[in-house]
Amino acid sequence: MKTKLAFFPALIILTLLVLMSLILSMGFGTAELGYQAVWQCLTDECQRNIYQTILIDIRLPRVLMGFLAGFALAAAGALMQNVTRNPLADPYLFGIVAGAGLGATVSQFLPEPLQAFGLPLSAFIGALFAVAIVVMVLMHSNWRRIEHLLLAGVAVSFLLSALTNFILYFGDAFETNRVIFWLMGSLARSDYQSLMWTLPVVTIGCFIALLYSRQLDALLLSDESAKTLGINVNQLRLIILVVCAAMTAVIVSYCGGISFVGLMIPHIVRPFFGLTNAKLLVASGLLGGCFLVWVDVVSRTILTGQEIPLGVITSVIGSVFFLFLMRKM
Image 1: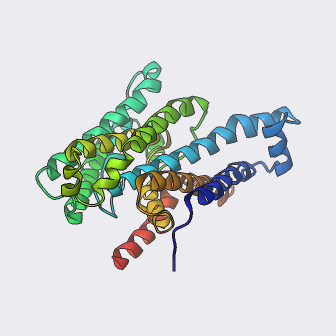
Image 2: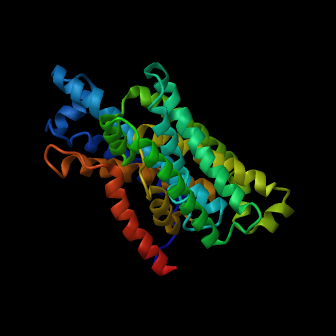
């Protein structure tokens, strides 16, 4: 029988798990350096210049980006499931990832100097476009109707994915292959510049969500209960969806499409931490970050000399989890 855990002791355990994951995951890779070299580089100075290059310049930003991506996707999934009172809501199934992927694909045709700014902006516009379509479809229907939300999200995902494939079909062969691999999800392009763009968006998004945590808790009861407390339900949903779109878009713009993280992690966390948004958001984010860090370790170590896209691994795990969840419901 699962029981709720005291939040602060559990938070300390999750934080320790995060720190251990970040440090231990840096020891895995093509070049085996040993954990003594990892610890020395993190706490003092690297013994050799090659250790500095491998650990600090290559692996550290990749590990940090993996944690940040998992944190953002899991937090966005938790927010979407609560704001729609739909246990199957997820940035991927909602069409946000497909929209962000379309925007990021279009940005590949921008001039090289503009791509650093155009990539996240185009992904954000594409994610908002997906949200706008789903919101327009569901505007006059019940948000609690799971089949409406899923059908709208899946339809938007297929539509925007088809547009992305159409653009890639007429693109340069080399550029198309590069974009296709990127759309499958990868942390290979992670660097400190991408972290500088990603961290503020995710931090601000989570801060806004925490500010509205009381209103979101009231929304868990029913729309009518929330309205009697003076909450503008439609405005609140729109704000949270925009926050989820922003966090998902900035992750997709640098990491590609990584599916099902936002669906799985909140369901794993919820029996232990409850339904309230603040606790669920923090716990889902921390566990989601750890999950994606280790998925990335598997993706770059399971095959010698090759890297499996993150989206392939998360899709396999997430599909099994999704089928199990559907059967349980």
